[in-house]
Amino acid sequence: MELTSVDVQHKRFRAVWMGYDKRQVEAFLQQIAEDIQHVKLENANLQKDLQNQEKELKEYKEREKTIRNVLLNVHKTVEQMKATAEKESKLIVAEAELKADKILQGAHQRLAQLHADISELKRQRIQLETKLRSTIETYRQLLDMDKKDLEEDDPESRIQPHER
Image (cartoon, rainbow, N blue to C red; front, top):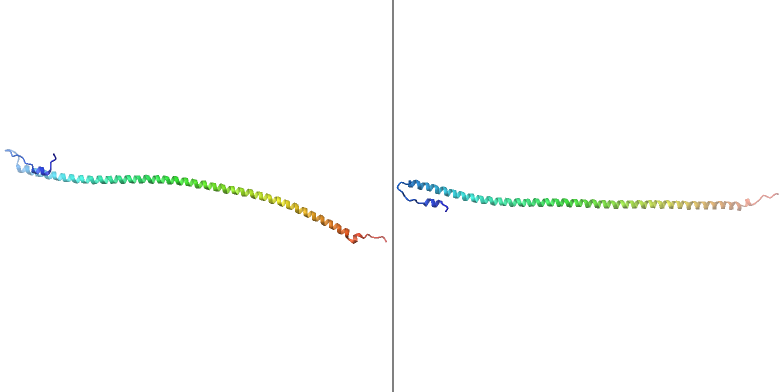
């Protein structure tokens, strides 16, 4: 059974012939009752403080847990973003290399076409020069023939000196 300050205050002892001074015992019991009351109030206050602190501690632990989860999620997100950025950069580089290859291939094809065009133009030039030379030669021959014909058709050249 737990004693209360009221129990101590109302406790009565039997009187004995050579016992203790009744007033001192009652004063002492009164002091003990007050001390018990004080201790109980202090204990109740401490219990209340302890409950408040345990509640705060629980809140802090929950906040800490939340913060850890947030940090973990942030870390995961950063890692995912980093991985995504690396993949995207590799994809961009691959696309750029593919475009560069296409451009280079197109340039090579254009160069080959230009070489083919140059060869064709050279062939056409040679062919044109040959035709032109042939035409010039034909006209020269015609001119020579006309000159001969003119000489033959020249009346003076036909007249032969007669002997008189």
